Length: 220
Image (cartoon, rainbow, N blue to C red; front, side):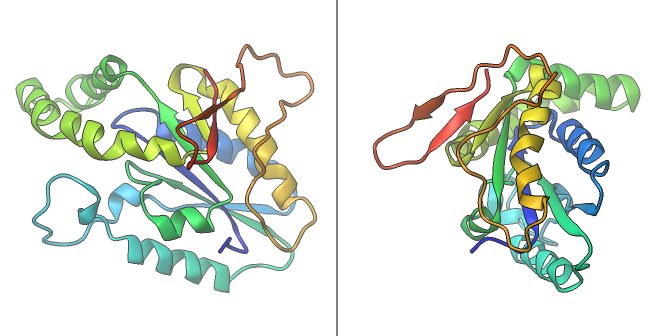
């Protein structure tokens, strides 16, 4: 069931720009009176001594749910809490998806993600390029194709990485009604409205995966 807090899940591949989007969402939301934000870093919540190197089984989803419950128990009646959860598998867990008000998938092509990864780890942090490429080819790329990309179908919003600064305003427009004067929270409706004065070339449309699945917005 939906959480009394407003939960926004932000999924996507390695170096897709999830944390950049979280920072931009946070910047816009904290400017709203009586709104408090909290970020749960899913990728830091790994199960200790887990043998799995690929897939969602190495992530401690019960710990995430426990942290959400703890945050809900400390809610300030004078403020509305928005919980932002970025991570490779942010859209994987069914219970977490059911609690979320909005589910976002950051769509970014593989070449761009690899280039960002190299810039961060090799050029900035001085890590070995050969080891990074080996990790990408043997772990990150197959993991994305097999496990992470399929979670895109659960997204309410598919946000192209190169236009994230425009899409964030649309995402916030979907969240703001949930924090504006209501005690309870429901899932965001399948419609987003750009703010007045924001020029955007994003084309919002829906796409069916099949007759049995929900629609999502592809902002590309």
